[in-house]
Image (cartoon, rainbow, N blue to C red; front, side, top):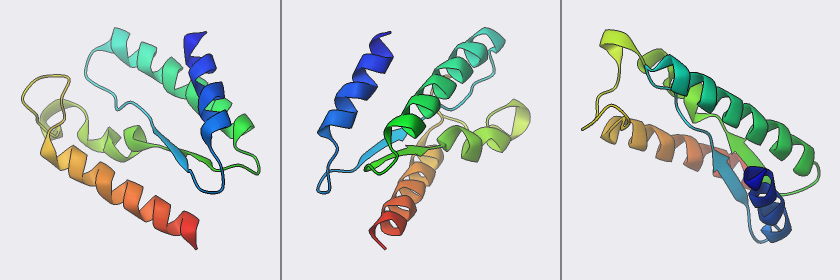
Amino acid sequence: SHLVDVLQDLRELQSSQVHIAWRNVPMNQHELEKVLWTDTNELVQNNLTSFSKGGNMSYIDLAKALEPRSVLYDRIGGNNIYHFGLKARLLFIQILANHLLWKMN
């Protein structure tokens, strides 16, 4: 698949000076798309796990962090159904910063 090829290219780019962090796709309310994105997230996570042993690649599970606020009335709102908005983006920045600081130590 093209996605696996992209992940292999990223593996070649990563080094001691370059850290590759892949953010997965948060879920939305549509069941068909939820299945598609769940399969995509699992494919990426499985490939990154096998690639990153001893490397400088990470999988950041934003979907899990946003899951409690991804559906129904407690959903973080954005300007359309596919966009979680500023709150979710700020949460991602916080997760990414914490992750990179943890990797540096």
